[in-house]
Amino acid sequence: MFCPKCGKMNPDDREKCSGCGAVLHEPKAEAPKKKSGAPIKIIALIAAAAVAVGGTAVAVSSCDKAEAQVFAEACFILNF
Image 1 (cartoon, rainbow, N blue to C red):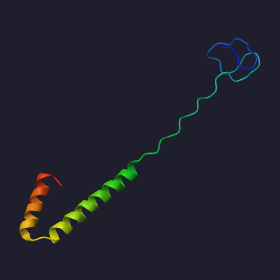
Image 2 (image 1 turned 180 degrees about the vertical axis):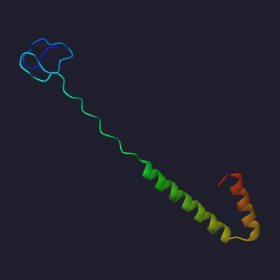
Image 3 (image 1 turned 90 degrees about the vertical axis):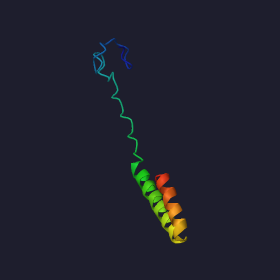
Image 4 (image 1 turned 45 degrees about the horizontal axis):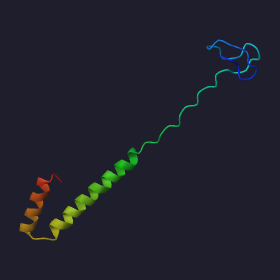
């Protein structure tokens, strides 16, 4: 490898130039860590579950027994 500062030939495994002492291999910068979206997904899942449970309670409480039975069976079939 040639030194970028003085042009002297150096073995590839050298860290500094044998002629001028310049650094031959710059340390590799670490890639920035990606933030996890897990907390947002958990909050969204909890909110969706709360809406589903709340909607079920409102739907069942606002109808008569026969309608509630049909609604419950539909939810069971759809795995809600």
